[in-house]
Image 1 (cartoon, helix red, strand yellow):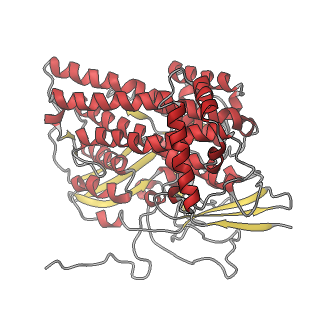
Image 2: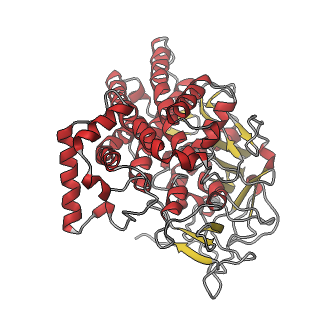
Image 3: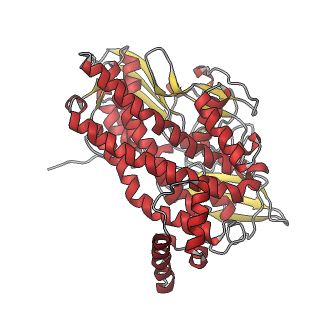
Length: 555
């Protein structure tokens, strides 16, 4: 007999996500629904405003992805204005974005996703000496590794447990049979969980050096950047470089080894394809390396896991709302997109039916099909496109785990891809810093291209923040914003069903997963968290009761 399970909320950060699944008598998920239950109003607020203000407003979509929306909005305006920023501005933007990747991915693995793999309570029974030996088997110089340190971490965790106040480790499913790591592995990664609380700050500080502050940086403008004095200051460049070195060391001696360590015990799930999803992958192109369209992560799509990269036809990008709480019936290209609320709620028994509207998330489609975006999509497309560095990283990881290439199409593969691209980006940031210094030494100190707002224009900014493909579309009339739409990574991945009944990536990734304990849906958490959900970014609407924006008078 089928049974319904609802996990609400499932996210550990940024917004409210409800996952509903139906399991059979063998506790295998046969159907799934992904529902965003939180909404807010940004896109409509932009109408009638100066396009140059859009970047500072759209970064309020989210408290985590602030820079990503800032940059995409600026890029959309630059496209509409018909201008390009100078090379130095492009490099500084890459330096800010690169820092965000490093800090975001470290934080995700340890603080948002790690406890889906790691049983904290199990670490209490670990042998610290054996933990040292295990850590050194995955890295010759493991981060903060000693018998004394591991014993101290174990003592701290014991105090948490004995006090009954587990803090960030509370309300978990400790002891669930889906946890596969031995106590020593749990202790190692738990130790780095605590280390990462300090280390992750370094990336935020790197962003602030060129962004002015973090979160919500303020130094991007249409045509370039305003933080030229920081880029021309050797001491500021040195501060950035110092933090980069420290953060890269953590990635290489803690993050990568910990993913390999976890992968050793979970590789069976990877080989079985658990959490694989929709089989289609999309990347807009991340980190522009010049003005010719060359990117660190190439643009393209992979369809049905066929290992060939297809070019992106932007006309094939649409959103539809058959199962979303909006008015409308036909798919719309984002440049012509509308956002009219139509909230119907859930049905009487609280369970979702095939014909229901059930999410504030729209359903993006590429050529009529759902596509996954994010680290796995970027790494797969770069791998298939022949990027030698990515191929070496991926092949080396698969060899170390003795896993087939098909293991990439899984929850484990998605998690590993995020770690590998963190190293890949970290390896390139120093080169961008040297490129900036070289330009300045050669006398090129341009950081802004003069521009003015056109009477009419239309543009889009397409980029690759940590969570995946992000696009902002703007239409300008009478020098002001006439329409604005954003299709964000979590909109792609959290998509509900479309008019043809095709599930979105979150939903499809859960099908076929067996739950060890239906009262402890750890496997659902593990797979959904591997996408790094960010619900606040995915929903931007107005009050459905009044259909208007609130008005305030400030005395």
